[in-house]
Amino acid sequence: MSNMKIAAVVALFLSFPLFSIAGDLSYPESRRLVFPISEADSAGNIVKNGDRLLAEIASRFEIPEIEYEPKPRPRYWKTGVLSQVNFSQVSLTNWADGGEGSIALSAYVDMKANYAKGDVFWDNRLQLGYGFVQNFDDIYKKSDDKIVLDSKFGYKAVDKLFISAIFSFKTQFTPGFKYPSEDNDSYILESMFMAPGNISLGLGADYKPFDFLSVNFAPVTSNLVVVTEQSLREKYGNAIDQVARFELGAQLKVDFSKNFGDKFSLQTSVTLFSDFLDSPQNIKVNWDLVADLKLSKVFSINLRTNLIYDDKILIDNGDGNLCPRVQFKEALSVGISYTFGRY
Image (cartoon, rainbow, N blue to C red; front, side, top):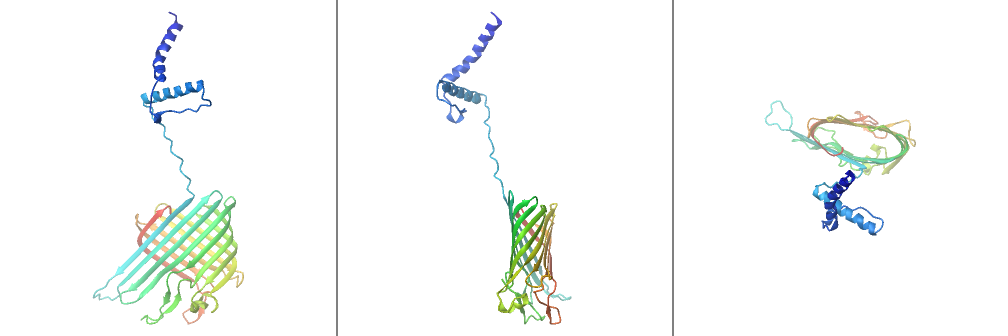
């Protein structure tokens, strides 16, 4: 027998079991491999028999089914929360050196929700802070109180430069007092909710050379100073019968926010504003700084400072005269700190 005949016999022998399987095989529908066909004719029947054959081969050789993981949905929002609680307590009993027992508690929350997609970004930040100190033989005194909401929307004009709109709202939760005498029998109201309240809206450009740095210039910025308490209006630059005072000018704001490794973070924001309607040469300054050093997952040392200069805010210079002065507040504390989300 020639070599060609031997090869033909061997091929026929090997193919016989496969054709037997393809003839009348029943198999689970869920394991069928489907191939699309263009016409349902005799050729189509052959393709279907081929499907059954391939399915049986896959089952006998235990060929695993290929599973494709779905592509993750893009995340355009980045949200996170930083929460801090600081507590201290001192108690004295028959203490020869003297002193007073006291309790102090402060809390700070910093929430961010930032959106970025294509040429559009929208950054939002809400800061809430409150604290008090109370000596056991004294009255409750507020040590910190702030509500600050910042929002900025931008659309890319060229690389790293955005046309932007910036919004800001600032006030405090509860009344604040000044205590001119040590016995605290008398006190003077200094502030309360929406007295003052500052609402600002500016249109301009935002430059982002780096992810951690933003320079915003708004040549058209409106600012509304609201003082709902009549007795406080002149202190914050409003007329005695003026609930809200309108300002129009230019604003420059620089924001810096960066993590240095896993332990230290620094955020600072400087805002300069010139009121075209009244003494534009007197630049109003607001500078905030927040520094946080993590000692562990839940304990940290944090420093918060705030510097303000506003020629419309009148402060006692110690001689009984009211005049504009530089305001500065600093809070250094050790306490519990925890972050949520992608802060």
